[in-house]
Length: 98
Image 1 (cartoon, one colour):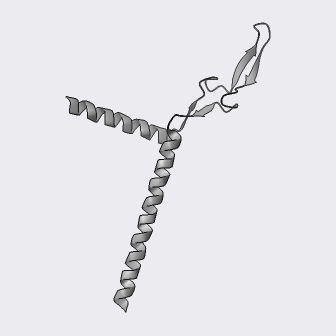
Image 2 (cartoon, one colour):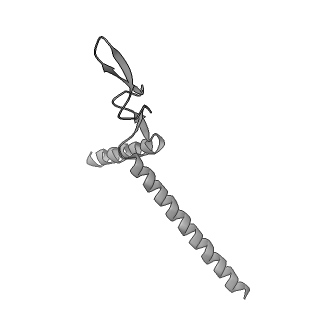
Image 3 (cartoon, rainbow, N blue to C red):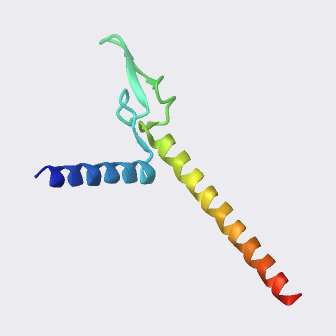
């Protein structure tokens, strides 16, 4: 039972991290994505640009920047390893030709 629960938790975490990578932005909590908030009195309400999202209607989800940085780091490391293997293979071929 506990093994299944652990696997479900790992699967849920993987899905959440995937959603952070695919959809890094969510609706602004203050303006609910409408880009404006209503300020003023009941008699004279006026729409004002949302101070939280600066009028974009979106905010970055918690952890999405970290996930993107991690993916970039992993890709950079894989590219570096690929270049090292290619250089090693080229040197090996050059030694055979001599």
